[in-house]
Length: 133
Image 1 (cartoon, rainbow, N blue to C red):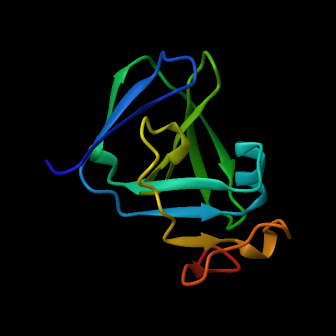
Image 2: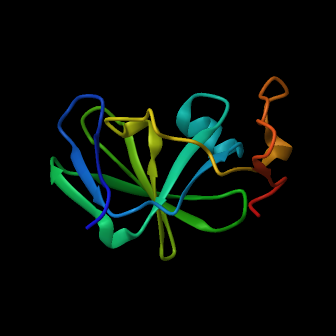
């Protein structure tokens, strides 16, 4: 089984578990991630869709068009609105701020840096892409 990662929404109605090692952590500076997070960027932990297990609550979904032109399904808690994950094609990314323990997170790459806020500093040695890669 490997790593077990638990998380959930702000109100506590939605709880989930990811079983298995994540593929990586991306920081995205696109305008949609800025809007979704209400901040300068979004953080997404890439996982295998089969690794995600909803343990309690229910999710609602909607679709948005990404800066790349792809369509993205967004899943959130219908009670508090916390975004839980995104799915694009066969890929899934958990919104990293919803993890119960975020102390181990370390971004592998920053994307859409052409839309990055001027005050955000990307650490030395972390890959940067001006668009989605």
